[in-house]
Length: 472
Ligand code: DUC
Ligand code: ZN
Ligand code: ZN
Image (cartoon, rainbow, N blue to C red; front, side, top):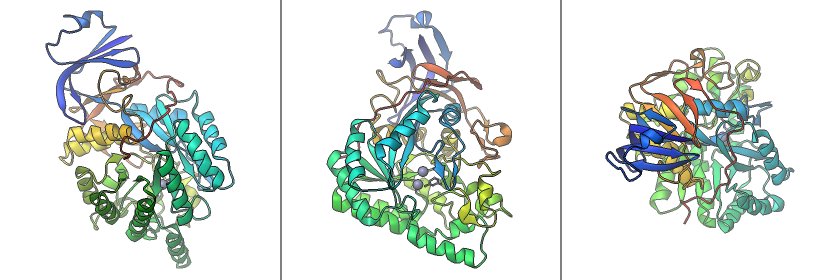
């Protein structure tokens, strides 16, 4: 099967240019400037399908480097399966996810990873890889880290939050970082001071402060900035590179920026919810409504100016990746577990379907360029997580993961506009985007075309990842 995408504007992290893109089988065969006849004068006649992309952007498929499909968490399980979650991702122009396999204390890392393979195998609409959460750092799990690197799982997530569940002590973090430093892998960190948060949560509840907004008020920015600084200091001592996930506090990014400027190999990720949503407008809605927006790190105060600062840090590359931390829970029966006690609300927001659109709105609003959109949502995640060469660019030899995006289109987001995630509500209800995902191609197969899903369960393959290109 050959597909010719003609007359579009091909956007990569490096620049935008008028070009035709020829797909042959699962790969991009050629990117042809206007008038380039090196493959013959009329390749259009021999192509199986021709798509006219006049006036549209042709961009590499989105890579969401942070999702939690069907993850057991907070006494329940994230509501998207690999089947529903990857299908929703495809609808939104994301053609690769990297999900988190989870190991808890006392469990064998290899068995946990095998369980995640079982959940995903044969079920995904788009390609997928895994990071490994190491919730119990000990001599066995440290050895397992070396094995996993050989199996294409080259990133390991640790938690400084959730005492008794996932939290690693500073000593455990230090050991895992030393291991990463020796085997070339990368540590990803959930940087919040979980012990301090637990004290604040217990005190708030004792004072009768039970509403969802207290989720954010008991996780003040200091808990994120302190943990960020501690994580980086530990990484500095071990020489390990460090990637801080879901950053939401401007003060935490300021800490990261300082160490980055000193030449340390530290990277920051943020998510759409921290760029658009806030404590005042969402979490503090009356009654229990705010539960829809309980996630960690938490949404922060707009009055404190975090959102604008995060956009600025995206421009300066102190934040270099946008993922979703997609961790959906239904309102009925799942979020409702926390009625009368905000600490029992399962933490998570579902956004895997909307990231490309939401961040494109940042282009429309003049916050970032169209090339930076591609870089933050596809190219840097590919380089960061050892996928570049296959994913993250429109270039010959790369996988034919391509999105045709219409900047003159319009996308109304929300549950009532029928999103495709397995959720009974939307954190993004009412958002309108000045752009539209028209066509999505995953390894040469058209999976979304003109508001129709054409993909298949099981098309998505496991991606054995290499080492990060950002390691030195
Ligand atoms: N934060 C969330 O909001 N959900 C899953 C785990 C996490 O760290
Ligand atoms: Zn986390
Ligand atoms: Zn997460």
